[in-house]
Image 1 (tube, rainbow, N blue to C red):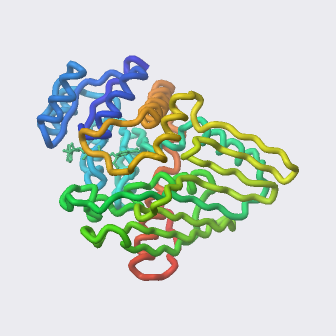
Image 2: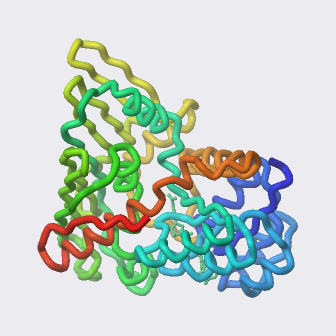
Image 3: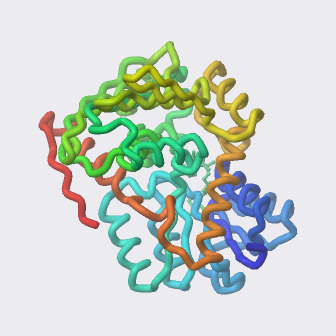
Length: 358
Ligand SMILES: NC(=O)c1ccc[n+]([C@@H]2O[C@H](COP(=O)([O-])OP(=O)(O)OC[C@H]3O[C@@H](n4cnc5c(N)ncnc54)[C@H](O)[C@@H]3O)[C@@H](O)[C@H]2O)c1
């Protein structure tokens, strides 16, 4: 994996984590760019590579195999299309995009160029979630009836209204900005047939458009009923997914960093989300901490660093083996498709049918 050359577009909070994670597992960083040349130069100096003023020069001069895209949510498409035109594989941070059409255009060009698009759905790759998926595929719960996901926390009222992370037009709103749980529901349970969604702002009067309570009711094509509740107006933090089948239940609890399988015959099995004590501990501690959005200079917690390393290893292995069929390249448009339908449901106050295009 040592010979895979990567370039990075977007050197903010998460771009820096990606550069660290991908190089730690063997990729060779060959160049970086950012709208802020200071940020790009600062990161480049840490790796002894060049910083570039613009994307095209970066691609022409560094000729990477894989381009990592960690620009803000609204700005994923342009770098993605450019990197594909230059014949590179791409790894795009979540959300894939805030518009379904952008994802379709990117996937269509990737198909034409025979390149792979990876999306950074890193929770999928954690050992406990991979095991959860394998258990569901083994049908341990029998017929699935109902599922419930939530990511509930409190974040103080935003002071800097101009920061892109506080502007719903740039993030796509919380459903897109924190798309992980919706993606896990899609990845674990299959295609969704329809969604009814409602949202409101209860705790952030400085940014009225920024809905801090979001509720989705989902009907899957296989008959499963599910709900997703998320937001930043909840003083009691909760983060997890519960799946109920005819034979038992699987409960993923991110704040205890555990997955618990309870079967109706009385059997109970519990395993951790990580295979390493320190990463599990770090995830457990994250539930207690005061929550806020990460700024460019935020320090990333150990659990998130490890998650990036785990996903990076999967991406590099898949490229080395020329295997495009992997956990970060399959079903990558699904959560955006459902999030777009949910956005429409919020606007129209109607249940919306999901139209999968790919
Ligand atoms: N997987 C995760 O858990 C996770 C965690 C944090 C962030 N993210 C995602 O990573 C992406 C970046 O988030 P962040 O927290 O690093 O934001 P950030 O604001 O810290 O960094 C974004 C950087 O992109 C640069 N940029 C903007 N437009 C650009 C362009 N056209 N060309 C080059 N550079 C450009 C900005 O100058 C900035 O430095 C977002 O999509 C976010 O959702 C994912």
